Image 1 (tube, protein in one colour):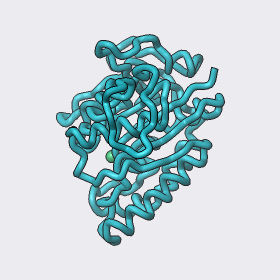
Image 2 (cartoon, helix red, strand yellow):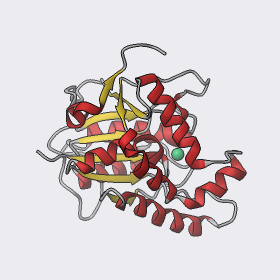
Image 3 (cartoon, rainbow, N blue to C red):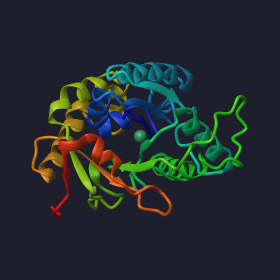
Image 4 (tube, protein in one colour):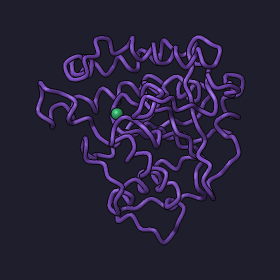
Length: 258
Ligand SMILES: [Zn+2]
């Protein structure tokens, strides 16, 4: 039974860094994968005005998604302008209803950046609202309500740590060693970010940093490369391990605290 998978994070490249290997596995198994970014990354440049860099980054994100046959769309919030308010929640609910996901992967509730944390909260609450028939999004035409709350999983925070650099440990890891080539190719589509991160973050190798983080997770899991996920446990979200079941033998439970 093929499933609809929605990966939704704040900016172009977050999904690639944190979950592209897992999404490549799911797409390879025939599931329908949609990648949504909340913003087009309109502040991610010191060389282009916001409309220009947004245009560039939408195209980069679309090319990345296409590498695994995924659809891409942008929710068109602005960088540093994602807030959990009424209008934003309705917009995210409409996105969920259009994607009709069985399973949602989103940002960690705790992360280094306000946009990531706001995305996590908005998506969590939109999963609750999306099946509610009387919750109107105001879209015209509006997609129908979901049949049920989708399964909700959180990706790791960037770097696997909270704001105090304390590890945020996943429930389980996914062995993505076989997907590192496609994961790297997807991230490499975000060419505009290599120059930006060098200037703004002092990060001199975008791709190597992603590989190092994925390798660090692999070390925690006993494999070469891994991505980590947590299942949201709030009532009344579904608690059956759908993602683990879809992935099968590449799932490694976290049995110890490194
Ligand atoms: Zn981000």
